[in-house]
Length: 397
Image (cartoon, rainbow, N blue to C red; front, side, top):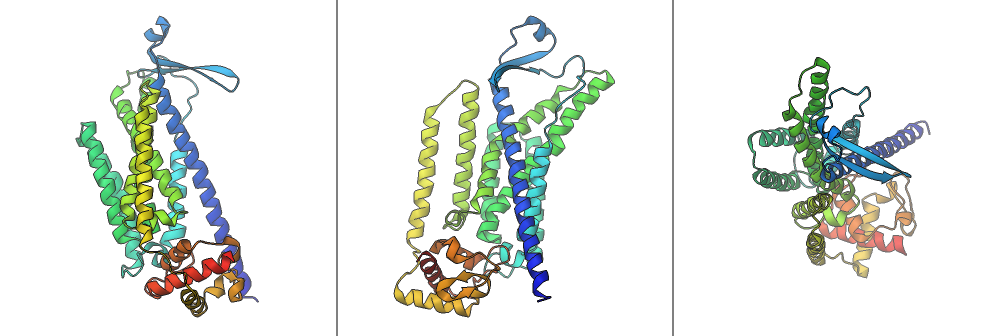
């Protein structure tokens, strides 16, 4: 009893830590994404000031808004106002908190469980080396992106290069890491670029404006122009990162054949959606873009489903009987509750309550998740498919 209680307490604290970090990560990401959406909309919607005095004072654009039962008049200066205001609102902790909580989740869920959660099933890559590669790729993403921005001035060339690098990152991550971890790795690399943009370019540019006004000198507009460019880049990357945050709940996506291509396609659709809205905010609405985006999404879905048809999980009586034997011999009942098998484990989720699909069971058994180890290499594909057929049928029945 004395040894069981600390173990149960440790598991409970681990679960609450996981929940707390996920909650913090989602809240921070929502705030950051919402801020990005709003300010890009604001910049695209600004109109020249009507009051000549405002223009003489340095106002470059203004926008009237209605919200919360009243009207707002928002003005943006070309560089800075003549007199520095006493209070200035900053938008930075949304980005920092999103990255810090996201990295903490990677640490708790993947780095500390690297052998089962990060390393590709069946691969002999050492867990510590997998973690080192993952962290190095996060840093490399920012370094390469920053160098490209400093040496490539043509936006078309820059975005083409960035797309190719994202595709290479998706392919390389799929070769190195487990399917679910591979998608999150790419999302982590993009999220690192976005947070680093805020830390190393956007916020320092804002400080330069303030220090110049405090010193009584004319602010240099170039850092602000570069910060605006990085902010727009972040805006286009928001939906691709959000995709990787949510995709962990959908094994049919990250577990699909050529999942890295699926990821690249969905990220491109997300960036395309932002392009549509950013153009619309500036007064250019192209409805054909929405049709093209929807068609691309349907095409990806059809390709994924067509690939799944060739790997259908067997469900005949012989396969179910084999799956029942595998469930018992592999010790699944120690962690999970499944009435049909007489299993009453409480470490993992109750299968009777969760009623998982066969594809989800196969993914969890093959790749593992959290405290659950990966059985790929320990069980054959036939055994994994059989236990998936058994568990999904028994839980549903």
